[in-house]
Amino acid sequence: MTISHCPFTGKKLPEPLEDAWRNTIDEIFGTDDWSYDDAREQLPDKYFNEQWWIERKL
Image (cartoon, rainbow, N blue to C red; front, top):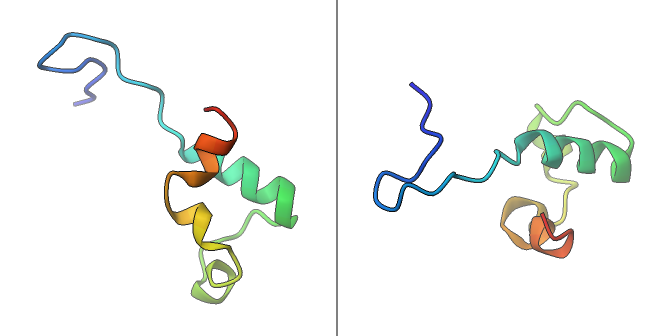
């Protein structure tokens, strides 16, 4: 079951950012395979918290 609205306020929830995250990583680092731990270790910490999407105003 997909939840598209907040159960408390009824407001529509924002779209998931997973695709945007993967596209951003692909653009910056030139790869689309981040499934391996050694590849993920190359990413700056900001790509594992909200900083990356706040900077892009997503």
